[in-house]
Amino acid sequence: MTTPIIEVNALTKRFGALTAVDDLSFTVDAGEAVALWGANGAGKTTVLRCLLHLIPFEGQIAVDGIDVRQRGKIVRRLIGFVPQELTFHDDLTVAETLVFYARLKKLPTGHDFTPLLTRLELDEHVHKAVRDLSGGLKQRLALALALLADPPILLLDEPTSNLDIRAREDFLQFVRELNGAGKTLIFSSHRLEEVRALADRVLLLEGGRLALAAPPRELERRLSETTTLHLALLPVTIDPALRVLSDHGLPVSRNGHGVRVQVPPDAKAEPLRLLHDAGIDVQDFTLE
Amino acid sequence: MIDFQNVFILAQKELRDARRNRWFLLYALAFAALALGLAWMALRGAGDYGLAGFGRTSASLINLILLIVPLMGLTLGALALAGEREQGTLLYLLAQPINQAELLLGKAIGLGLALVAALSLGFGLTALLIATNGGAADVGIYLALLGLASLLALVSLSVGMLISSATASGATAVGIALFVWLLLVFFGDLGLMGSAVVMQFDIDQLFLATLANPLQLFKIAAVYSLRNNLEALGPAGIYALRTYGDQLVLLLVGLLVAWVALPLLLTGVFFKRRGVL
Image (cartoon, rainbow over all chains, first blue to last red; front, side, top):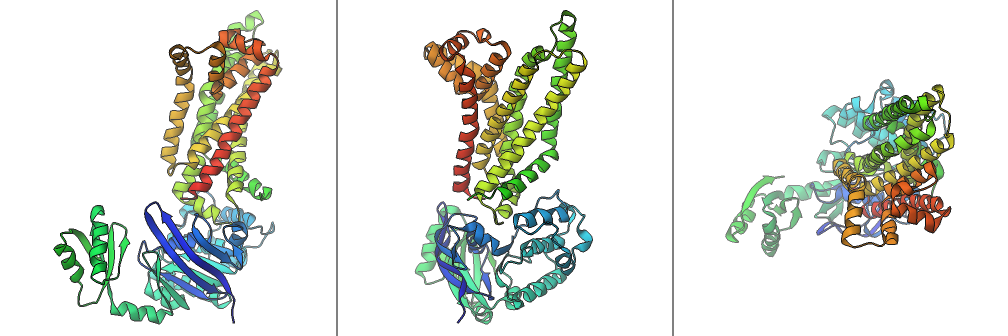
């Protein structure tokens, strides 16, 4: 029996009136690859930030048995993080960036970065300023920084969102190798092919709540059964719309400037009709 | 638990960034140029009468310091956290095995050293000009002024960082910092005079109100170290000297140190509450 390396219990995060993550509990086993899947605003990034204790939260998170809130620094030593927005200090060169973060991660002076740089094909770019790197190279630098101290866990926030198709395939291949070598992987994504390629298990988040925890094929099956409709609404009509749609048994959640509702593929107009009958104007809609 | 090795690494990074910060370099150069100009004028105007030297230049420098040093410290401090928060680099930094206290201390020490280095450059170049023109009198006064100016720079930095800890964007933080600078520099005296008249302050109340403004603390300490009396500051100055005597400088320096420590502590509280977002 494997021991969970990450345990999340009743995690809740509120930003003012908005509940971004709502009573979320899950565990991740050592060496497992888990995808956080959901639409924009579903709470994926917030969960990753809570795992690193970058923001205050309610509930408990333990990594390798260590309470994140009590001993965040030790936990962050166990985790390599690749953020969605690749924001490093732009005026530093790649080499200076590596040395700066290596020192913070307590790597010995004179540490040889060459194998890592070669594997990530960054060796030709070490003297370039970070601001001069392409999106793909920045992504590779982010992964190199995450792997500097060889942490057992990798957190990747939408890791391929800035990459073209070829770079995405290379990146996924490398991450798959890392997982194969025993690293625990948690990544957020809204790309099904990414989930299919990497994940052992998917946690489907809807409106900050756990809607499904299952293998990727179960997610695929579920997605084929429903269509997701994003409705843009005036702020004052969001709460009444949530009430109207949920009263009619439709799975609905708040999403940015409107609501997100799941409907059978042959009933896409149903939410529009229900809202129209209730006197609620729909500003715009998109299908997922 | 604070790891001082992390503090050192972060302070080094801040020092390096300050060297590449165009605004900071501009302030530092402006301060050095104006200090040199004041020294040159002091030498030209009084040298023939044997009055030139560090003492006279120190007197001219007080107003320059009151104007420029708080501006340097406040703007540098205001960008320290809010700028990085806006760019997203703060989030990535705190995803590393460091804690918020180490980050704040590293920033405060690094930026503080950068400010003191900039002031030392201006004072050093000016000292060179005075010394080569034969005015070597009152070196002690000049060094005391450098010490007080450095303390004022740290106060401004600390207040700037407090503003930075509570704001989301660099532009907002700098805007608030400039407003605070205006308040302290231009409305400090006027506000005090107005309040004294309207609220009919006693002389001791007037002096206590004066102590609430760190720029006034610096000014009183600097004038006292220059002349050993405070007649130039009027009744409140005379009252202060009569009440506190030789302890006055200690009191003023102690209050300036408190002005460094207290905003920095509050910065920690705000930063913890707000987090990286």
